Image (cartoon, helix red, strand yellow):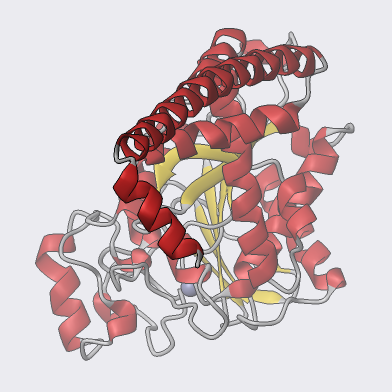
Amino acid sequence: MTVSKTKINAQTNPLNKIELIALILFSAMMFFFVSQIFYHAHKNKNMQANEQNLVKDIHKSDKNLIEEIVIEQHVSQDSGEIEIEPVTELVNEIFSDTELVKLENQKTIERYCETVGDKLGSVNVQDCKDAKLKLSGTVSNQARPLTYRDFVTQTTEESKQEKTRIMLVGGIHGDEFSGVSIAFKWLNKLAKAYSAESTLNHYHWRVIPILNPDGLLLPDGQSKRMNANGVDLNRNFPTEDWDEFAHQYWINKRGKDPRRYPGEAGGSEIETQWIVEQINEFNPHAVISIHAPYGIVDSDGPIEPPKKLGPLQLKILGTYPGSMGRYVGVQKNIPMLTVELKRAGTMPSQKNIDLIWTDIQNWIDKKVLKNESVAAMQSIRHEDEDTIIDKKAGD
Ligand SMILES: [Zn+2]
């Protein structure tokens, strides 16, 4: 019935229909304009409030908020949104680039330590954070940071003298977990020693706990000796004989063992380039490199090696084209110890960790003398390939 009534009205008075449509259109337009005015007023008010709150919070030094804003800044850049810009501009005005970089670096180290703590049974996230590692600015093939920590005290008297520099390197091989874990144990020992009086303080230490993070920091069961390119970093050092012998040695003596692939060229890998740069820049008086699982100590270079390190007896294994021992000990004539722990997946007892450390210190104190003319000393190394005990080739 209602339908027919409307029909009649529309037929008898057609002007009413046009007026009705015009009224509806007019109302809709008015509603749109008014709502836009309210929306923009509300938005401006919110932005002002955000900025005011931010200033308040910044004054409270609320680092968490700043970190969130740093993240938001990235999000807004990614999505192309510009609404956050007034806030980030304000942050940038108040906090210099250096402070923002510091925060970014801190987050990178935290993420790094989380993966290290997840990976190693003997090193937890806090142990790693306590080590206060520094980012070198160089990253591995898969963008993992290459980190280090320096320990040095400079008193007014000592600052005139040059310190004896010792470099400690772990994790060249990503599947030798104990070598990395013990580097962290000794890092923490050094940190304690440097907060108190100790003979260790007479030296300038540079500790690099993980040279091959791409080999180590993989899901369980996937860690590997080589780097992300499948290169054995301990065959990739740019020794003078690399071009002539590295591939020949790998093919003829190693049967193209993929675990000992020396790479396309000496020093082709970013991790090798970085450690070589570290060695040249730091110019150590001695280098200690940690491996597993052969349970011995090997030595290269010009000075008398230790007879033992704790339970590890001296056994000269020899060097290989592209090995760190050949590059550091033979070519650069820098005393080098290769600590071969007994097991790759299990740590030595606490007693043995301490004994090895004490014997390393004794060796440094007695044999690695500052300003000693190492170049004048005769190398104890046997260079003859035939004398190389390479059946195990642990290093
Ligand atoms: Zn090794």
